[in-house]
Image (cartoon, rainbow over the protein chains, first blue to last red):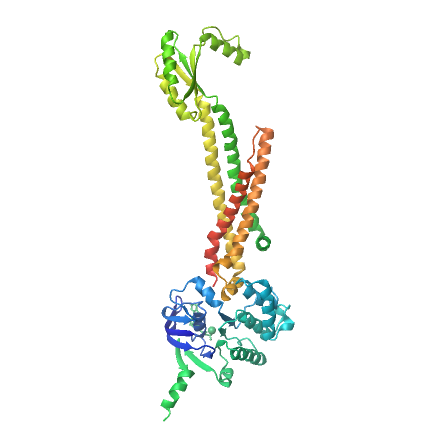
Length: 231
Length: 283
Ligand SMILES: Nc1ncnc2c1ncn2[C@@H]1O[C@H](COP(=O)(O)OP(=O)(O)OP(=O)(O)O)[C@@H](O)[C@H]1O
Ligand SMILES: [Mg+2]
């Protein structure tokens, strides 16, 4: 579903950010990306939603190949995946429901469908009562829920989350993380970059640890390897 | 259309000065085209009237024999450009001069004006070059002393018309270029002002075409407004000219519509040239 094959990412101004990264993420999986600051976590996520393209190697995401991908194909890919960030990226001059509807309007979904869909999404993230509030009237956790609802608007097969709890306190972090788990339980894959090792430890999900642009640990490999390593 | 108007209004509120500037430069561009087209149009009407009277008058030497004159007339009559050949005797010439220039009737004395062959040209052969060529051929005939034609001022009228057309095109193009540049700058600002919105649009899968749409709409509306403004300006100009200078006719509805359409094209093209490049900068 998501495959990285010997991916090298070199930025023009900063040089090599990812060096020979290969991994595979299955349908419906929950994967943590961990590692120190500057390790290359965000770069991996950007390669998944094709904000960046690999310098060498290749990336496949749900049938879309990064090498030689067309702008139009990237737009179509983004309709099949959701992305959330640490800073929410909501439009401040629009209400909660308008922010969610926005994601559907810009891909030409008919109005009547949008209305019912937005109502359903608001229910899913537990914000039905805040539909007509503006982002500035919401707590951080609530704003991230809005961003998640927006990311889910197109029924994505994967939710890409770049430190979604980075700006949240402990309580809000737990709430948002639980929401991500629920989403995953309903069948959507989640790829989440995080610094929060508490979350990683408590959950039993797959962990990809990145350091200096390389995958230094993959819990999926570890499980496979474990029987061989332990006598 | 409602959506287009709304998008344009939003654009207006965001950059009112630049929007007004865009519209007025489009208007000036079309106004330059329009004003000079107006001159050209009216000159063409004048030229058509003048041209229908274009004649070559070949003066006959005093000692020319009647048979030679008749022969010359026959020859001239065979020219494909010629529609009519007429002999004007010295007496007829005097009579005509006296009636046409009644104020000076006493000035003209018998024998002052020579006899002539008046040649009228067929339609389609009344432009200055043809007239000149035919006149030269007539001039070469033995009996003809001098062939005259209203060359100077027909040519002058033609020149003025060509000049008006050229000036209109050059000025219009110059303004059009400025209009396109200003529209481009407006788009750049508009894209920057909406960068956050555009990047979110991209993130959720909006295509370049979709992102471009409102900017093109805005350009279209501005172009149409500029076109209408130009039409009003040209119309006012034609009224002023009619009242204080000479009676002028105005464009018919088709050409007026074409002008407004020209504005729309300018607005859309100006936007399209810039918007593709600008929105690609937002990732
Ligand atoms: N757009 C960019 N242009 C140039 N260099 C970049 C760009 N984005 C990231 N980099 C570089 O790539 C490297 C990896 O950055 P990346 O953002 O992927 O790290 P990260 O693991 O997400 O870090 P953090 O935990 O701090 O978010 C860094 O050295 C960074 O300077
Ligand atoms: Mg990062």
